Amino acid sequence: MKLADLQAQFQSAILDGGDGVLAHIPNSPKESKETLFGVYRNAYVLRLIGILEHDFERLHTYAGDERFDELARAFIAANPSHTPNARWYGQELPDFIARHPETAGYPALTAIAKLEGTLNDVFDIDDAPVLMLSELAAFAPGDWAELTFLSHPSVRRMNSGINLTELWTALADKKTPPTVRTLDAPEHIILWRQDVMPKLRVLAPEEAMMWDEAAKGVPFGVLCEMLATFDNPDEAPLRAAQYLKGWIEMGLLQSAAIKKKKSAKSKRTPVV
Image (tube, rainbow, N blue to C red):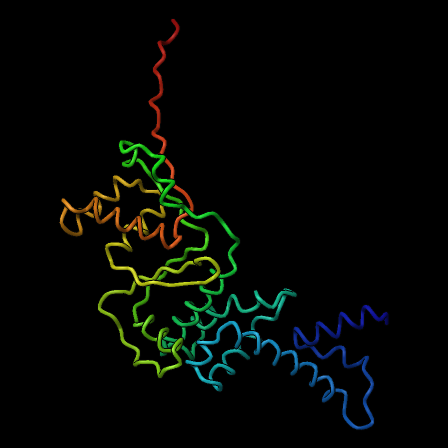
């Protein structure tokens, strides 16, 4: 057998768990080849567990060593690594935990994994420009009703039915996490990268609605009309402007533009 073929079988056996390569490995005078090969296989699994512990540090803290180790080993068994870049190995861990039967009664595990995984992704998004307040001065007052906004590519939104940010803050401060509570209304969370730091903030229901619609390209004038259904209609434009100012200061927006109106098709006189 060629060396390259033996190396390929060796790697496949470590990644996929097969033992066919053992037929090409001699026994040692002191240990069986099964034991010796097991050292390599176990070292590989431990390395992957270490990667997951690093990428999901707060999930590890919340779950504890034993439970996290069990989840990590189950994930590794079901998801062999197919990329040489260790950063991307754990991307599917939150979805795996959400589907795992043993986590069904522990919603915080799934929620913390999703939040931590999303922050990891936010951190690694490519750089992109951010909208500055001074750029809005280029738009005439009469154009603001048709003004639309493009969110920064690092921005993510998620909702949580439990007190997730309270748990997250306690873990960040290395304090005992509070009891998990089911909320009467979902917690609206926005995540983004400001400079080089991933961040998160809880949005009030009104602001969350406005952000979600703005991210779809709904123009500013329509956003103001929608805010009028939430609270004092006369102050809706002011509230919308305050939200917009905050988004720009946090770096949540990449650009602004005037939504082009569809031009009416000209009617042609049929040729007789």
